[in-house]
Amino acid sequence: MSRWQRWRSDPLVRSVNALGITQITAWGTSYYCLGVLAKPIAADTGWAISSIFLGFSIALVVMGLISTTVGRMIDRFGARAVMSTGTIIVSAGLLSLSQVREVITYFLAWAVIGVGMRFCLYDAAFAALVQAVPSRGRAAISYLTLYGAYASTVFWVVGHYLNAAYGWRGTLMLFAAINLVVCLPLNWLGLSKREAGTAAPAAGPTPASPEGPVLQGRRRTVGIALFALIMSLNGFVFGVISLQLVPLLEAAGLAGATAVWVASLKGHGQFGGRLVEIFFGRNLKAMTVARIAIGVLPPALLILMLARGELWLLVAFTLLLGASQGVVTIVRGAVPLALFGAQGYGAVLGLIATPILLVNAFSPALFALIVDMVGWQSAVYSLLAGSLLTWVAMEWMARWYGSARAGQA
Image 1 (cartoon, one colour):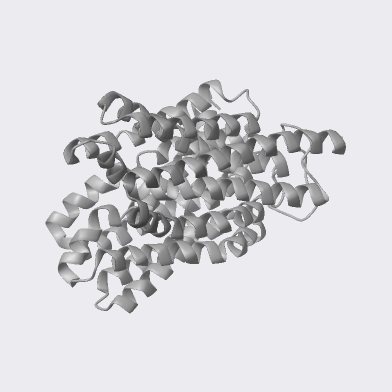
Image 2 (cartoon, rainbow, N blue to C red):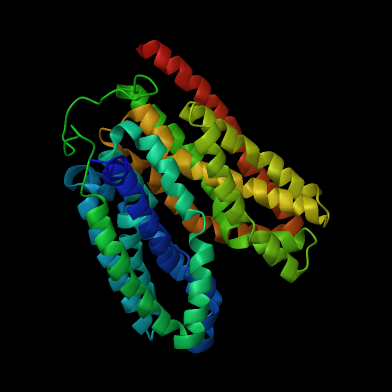
């Protein structure tokens, strides 16, 4: 077998490239679709924008409520079957969404999409990679997230042109078809191979992580709880910023068109941060990478608060923000793998994802309430407070983890 054939048949290469395409497609057609379709839906139906985005919040709540169950399903049945099923559910949800005439059926369609998204987005994909290449799980997760950096950018453009040509209902029907034609075969075929000697998931002793002995017993439970808390605090900040970045930049002094252009740089920051992690962070412990990624966020928000309309400072803020968010996505998969190992990894990610998804569902509404009470300028302090709490909790956990591993060795 030639070197090219060995490379092409490598389970890491096969699974990362297949899931890279499916993640761009699945995120862009479901999670990010309202970025371009919310206004057309509102214009056509007469529903309030708040009601339209409430549907998305319902999807996040559903994802949070079923997260632990889905994680256990991944461990029991394998991520290949779960992700392929999720693709079918997302397609059914998008097709249903394209046909709604009443708000209640709109909400129900988003609930279906929420089920499908939990079955086939990042948490499931990370578990799939760890099942396919457990010895190279962290590297595979890092490579996969490079693809996802531009999911919103690609499908906002695609969605814009499809909406202009076919309307929002036609766009959602096409999105449903794209998931079936592109994602379903790639999820099934891309995860058909595993590393040599890798068996299907089974109950048994937790194998050691390449970074050291994994946490066991009470320490494992405490570690899961601490990391879930940290990611939830971080999720409040990024849950707000993901929807409110343009208004935040406008409140900082940028005009509308310029604010949109600067906000678009966040994707470049995400890609750049993940690229730096792959080339320079791969020899660092996962906890060290987590401390750096989370430690970048408070200074970035300080730059936002002090920018006073200075374009270069706001560009720096957006790039740093994107880099932090990009690497935190890797951290969300890499730290649990390092601390708790590959055995039962899907269930662990499911437990951790539950509070994160619920926080993401309610954080934009909570922040909007804060803005109504104190205004945009003062509301940014709540984001800074959230980022500082996240950083303090991360530093405390790093020290706790060092002591826990020493005590367990």
